[in-house]
Amino acid sequence: MTRLEDVEFMRAAIEQARLGMMTPGAAHVGCVIVKDGIIVGRGFNEVEGQHDPTAHSEIVAMRRLCAEWQVTSLEGCSLYCTLQPCGMCTMACIWAGISRIVYGATRQDVHSIYFASRHVDTHDHIRNAFRDDIEVIGGVLSEECSAFYVKKDEPAPTKDDPAHAPTVPAAEGHERG
Image (cartoon, rainbow, N blue to C red; front, side, top):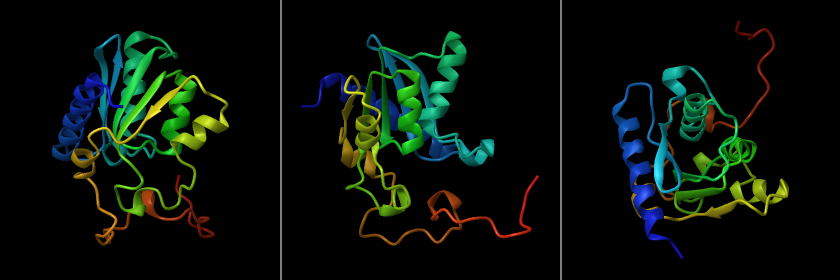
């Protein structure tokens, strides 16, 4: 059962996704972090703008909050995200001590491009980390959240986006740096 406050905080995450859509170099995944009923952290996807493949909305929000609070533990905090967290973001939540993960759009709501090369989902990561103390709730305002993303029955974007391509080894001689 969805708590009333989960809906309220997911609406705040949706607002972050909207801000991401309007920000050059950002994207439409939004996140807020809540402690004791107060939004204490915010973020949206900044991968392109920061030239950082780890700058997902959840990571951005956690980094800013940890820096502001001068801590590495976010124990007792709840993280709200408009899209089910990827493996990297789920593991970051585990390492940061996030107590609750609440997300909107699920794997079933959106095109497989968002998860196709990432077979393990949020629930698998939590279970495999033996963390039965982290509550995971999916599907909060899923229709509103999934409106930001390509649907299952829609064609995938043709843009050359490495985040949505299967992982392949770099060609010989093709090194950056």
